[in-house]
Amino acid sequence: VQLQASGGGLVQAGGSLRLSCAASGDTFRGYVMGWFRQAPGKQREFVAAITRSGGNTYYADSVKGRFTISRDNAKNMGYLQMNILKPEDTAVYYCAASRTIILSDYRNFGRYNGWGQGTLVTVSS
Image (cartoon, rainbow, N blue to C red; front, side, top):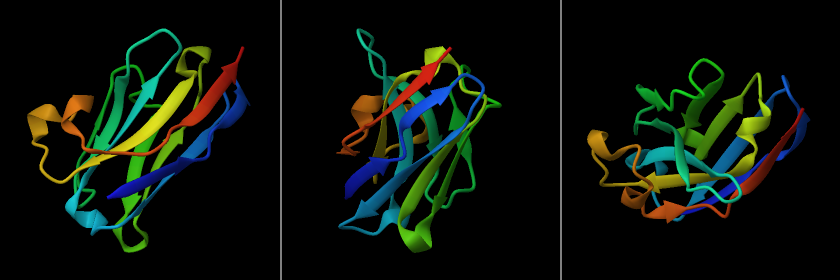
Protein backbone atom coordinates (compact mmCIF):
# COMPACT_ATOMS: atom_id res chain seq x y z
CA VAL A 1 0.00 0.00 0.00
CA GLN A 2 1.18 3.54 -0.76
CA LEU A 3 0.53 6.27 1.77
CA GLN A 4 0.58 10.04 1.56
CA ALA A 5 0.33 12.20 4.66
CA SER A 6 -0.83 15.80 4.61
CA GLY A 7 -2.23 18.51 6.84
CA GLY A 8 0.82 19.64 8.75
CA GLY A 9 1.63 23.27 9.35
CA LEU A 10 2.44 25.95 11.87
CA VAL A 11 0.10 26.38 14.83
CA GLN A 12 0.25 28.12 18.17
CA ALA A 13 0.32 26.17 21.40
CA GLY A 14 -3.19 25.18 22.39
CA GLY A 15 -4.32 25.00 18.79
CA SER A 16 -5.45 22.10 16.65
CA LEU A 17 -4.51 20.39 13.42
CA ARG A 18 -5.94 17.45 11.53
CA LEU A 19 -3.55 15.22 9.63
CA SER A 20 -4.74 13.03 6.80
CA CYS A 21 -3.28 9.88 5.31
CA ALA A 22 -4.40 8.80 1.85
CA ALA A 23 -3.90 5.14 0.99
CA SER A 24 -3.74 3.60 -2.46
CA GLY A 25 -2.63 0.46 -4.19
CA ASP A 26 -4.30 -2.12 -1.98
CA THR A 27 -7.36 -2.72 0.16
CA PHE A 28 -6.86 -0.27 3.00
CA ARG A 29 -9.23 -2.05 5.35
CA GLY A 30 -6.80 -4.95 5.46
CA TYR A 31 -4.14 -2.82 7.16
CA VAL A 32 -3.54 -1.64 10.69
CA MET A 33 -2.67 2.03 10.52
CA GLY A 34 -0.31 3.94 12.77
CA TRP A 35 1.03 7.44 13.22
CA PHE A 36 4.59 8.09 14.27
CA ARG A 37 6.60 11.26 14.69
CA GLN A 38 10.21 12.27 14.66
CA ALA A 39 11.54 15.46 16.17
CA PRO A 40 14.95 16.85 15.19
CA GLY A 41 17.71 14.85 16.79
CA LYS A 42 15.33 12.30 18.24
CA GLN A 43 14.25 8.81 17.35
CA ARG A 44 10.97 8.10 15.62
CA GLU A 45 8.30 7.48 18.22
CA PHE A 46 4.87 5.95 18.31
CA VAL A 47 1.90 8.29 18.45
CA ALA A 48 -1.23 6.24 17.78
CA ALA A 49 -2.56 3.15 16.05
CA ILE A 50 -5.95 1.92 14.92
CA THR A 51 -7.12 -1.56 14.09
CA ARG A 52 -8.35 -2.63 10.67
CA SER A 53 -12.00 -2.08 11.43
CA GLY A 54 -11.38 1.06 13.44
CA GLY A 55 -12.85 -0.54 16.50
CA ASN A 56 -9.81 -0.18 18.70
CA THR A 57 -7.31 2.61 19.11
CA TYR A 58 -4.03 2.93 20.97
CA TYR A 59 -2.10 6.03 22.01
CA ALA A 60 1.21 7.08 23.42
CA ASP A 61 0.82 8.42 26.94
CA SER A 62 2.12 11.81 25.79
CA VAL A 63 -0.84 12.35 23.44
CA LYS A 64 -3.63 10.46 25.19
CA GLY A 65 -6.65 12.68 25.68
CA ARG A 66 -5.43 15.24 23.13
CA PHE A 67 -5.08 13.26 19.90
CA THR A 68 -7.64 11.06 18.17
CA ILE A 69 -6.85 8.55 15.45
CA SER A 70 -9.59 7.50 13.05
CA ARG A 71 -10.09 6.00 9.61
CA ASP A 72 -12.61 5.85 6.81
CA ASN A 73 -12.09 2.59 4.96
CA ALA A 74 -14.64 3.50 2.31
CA LYS A 75 -12.50 6.49 1.36
CA ASN A 76 -9.12 4.79 1.97
CA MET A 77 -8.26 7.54 4.42
CA GLY A 78 -6.76 7.76 7.88
CA TYR A 79 -6.72 10.76 10.18
CA LEU A 80 -5.05 12.14 13.25
CA GLN A 81 -6.93 14.93 15.01
CA MET A 82 -4.52 16.82 17.25
CA ASN A 83 -5.88 19.16 19.89
CA ILE A 84 -4.29 21.19 22.66
CA LEU A 85 -1.01 21.10 20.80
CA LYS A 86 2.19 21.73 22.71
CA PRO A 87 5.62 22.87 21.50
CA GLU A 88 6.93 19.38 22.29
CA ASP A 89 4.56 17.99 19.65
CA THR A 90 6.70 19.64 16.99
CA ALA A 91 7.92 16.92 14.64
CA VAL A 92 7.57 15.34 11.25
CA TYR A 93 4.54 13.07 11.42
CA TYR A 94 4.36 9.86 9.42
CA CYS A 95 1.49 7.53 8.74
CA ALA A 96 2.28 3.85 8.46
CA ALA A 97 0.44 0.66 7.66
CA SER A 98 0.89 -3.05 8.07
CA ARG A 99 -1.15 -5.98 6.88
CA THR A 100 0.49 -8.50 9.19
CA ILE A 101 1.32 -6.66 12.39
CA ILE A 102 0.12 -8.10 15.68
CA LEU A 103 -1.19 -6.17 18.67
CA SER A 104 1.98 -6.43 20.73
CA ASP A 105 3.95 -4.76 17.90
CA TYR A 106 1.70 -1.76 17.25
CA ARG A 107 4.15 0.65 18.89
CA ASN A 108 7.17 -0.67 16.99
CA PHE A 109 7.82 1.32 13.83
CA GLY A 110 10.00 -1.48 12.48
CA ARG A 111 6.92 -3.69 12.16
CA TYR A 112 5.20 -1.41 9.67
CA ASN A 113 6.00 -1.93 6.00
CA GLY A 114 4.15 0.96 4.38
CA TRP A 115 5.10 4.58 5.08
CA GLY A 116 3.99 7.98 3.93
CA GLN A 117 6.47 10.77 3.21
CA GLY A 118 5.84 12.72 6.41
CA THR A 119 4.24 16.06 7.13
CA LEU A 120 5.80 18.71 9.35
CA VAL A 121 3.95 19.99 12.38
CA THR A 122 5.40 23.02 14.13
CA VAL A 123 3.88 24.26 17.37
CA SER A 124 4.99 27.69 18.52
CA SER A 125 4.92 28.74 22.16
